[in-house]
Amino acid sequence: MRGEVINLDGISGDGLISGDDGARYTFTAGSSRSSLRVGEKVDFVGTDGVATDIMSLGGAPASFAGQGYATAPSTAGYDFGWALFSFEGRLRRSHFWISWVILFFGGFVVGLIPFIGQLIGLILIWPNIAIQVKRLHDMGKTGWWVLAPFAANIVGIVLIVVTMGMSAVMNAEALEREDPAAVLAMMGPMLGIVGLLILINLGFLLWIGIVDTQPGRNQYGRNPKFPVDDTADTFA
Image (cartoon, rainbow, N blue to C red; front, side):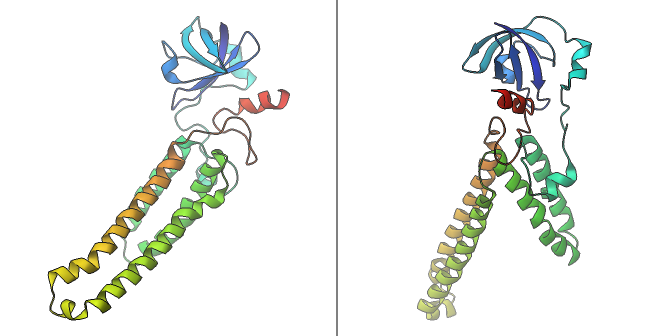
């Protein structure tokens, strides 16, 4: 089948082809035999809305850019203020990771500043939650899922305090003698809980950072990866 590339992600190389049969087909970078451009004519195998074995047939017409489609550069459409401070809309994976890296290294640097760094660290909780909520929206999930790791951390802290307190009371004499066995008995459960919390938080981060964009428009807004799909949904 033949068609034309109408949308292309400059980061992942994924895109969208309008087939000569009137249908639209998504594709990944690995499905093409060569690099593609928006407006380029291609030959491909189309199955269930997915294009594979894509072969370029020629150049992109200059007039195509005027129709509202363009190849996005690596940070195209990234709105720094909106990404970090708004809770509305959807945030694609690449923009989520850009935001996360900014906040991670920004928080690390300011954390080296006494007193002020700790205050700024608290302020950075807001943008961290904002990018997670919008990423959940992009997956078609409610933003309230962002509370899951916070709830796990609170429960974990309570368990650490309780287990250490009980161990201290039950092994008070041994702890006074600084018995290594008693110290390990008290510290062991704490380290286990801390390790579990690290896995939960890392798992949540990878979950929202790896799951792909929900196709088309959803209740939280248009598809940030292939906004042209909204038009297709409207007239479907």
